[in-house]
Image (tube, rainbow, N blue to C red; front, side, top):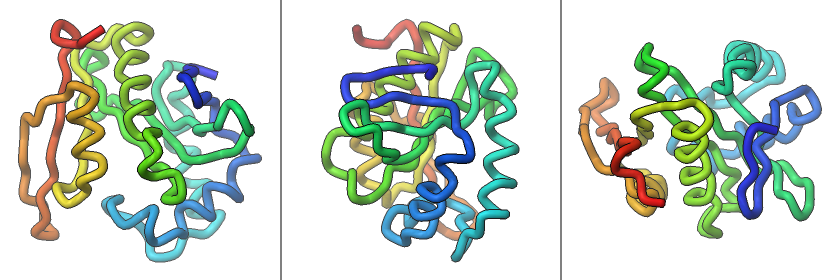
Length: 172
């Protein structure tokens, strides 16, 4: 486990979560805001994606399973990424099963990851990117004291927003 919040544990992804991940990745509601999403995920697709991301878990970066502390249930995934090729400038992201939306988990995940990046990984900046129409993630970023720093028109004609927080401006 890399991180624990009030209601969640962020644990290393492993094969026992594959059935839950498949269910989540094949839920249209959950995945409607995820770019480059397959229409139908197979176990082989998921294993390929999973292998590419968990290799970095030893560095503290990569994808982690989100487990409810009280029940032990899998509710999603969260990750820390070196998307900008600079270990001081990290990106965070998460996919939360739709049945857990609007319960405060997104904000708990985002704030936990921000704190983890600053305190454990010594990042100076933490960013989060989402499509502009993903109002839930926009609100989560804003509630987590992140500021909008970029709006980019994508090839699919939608806009991607980049929110960022800097270590020196993080609220305790």
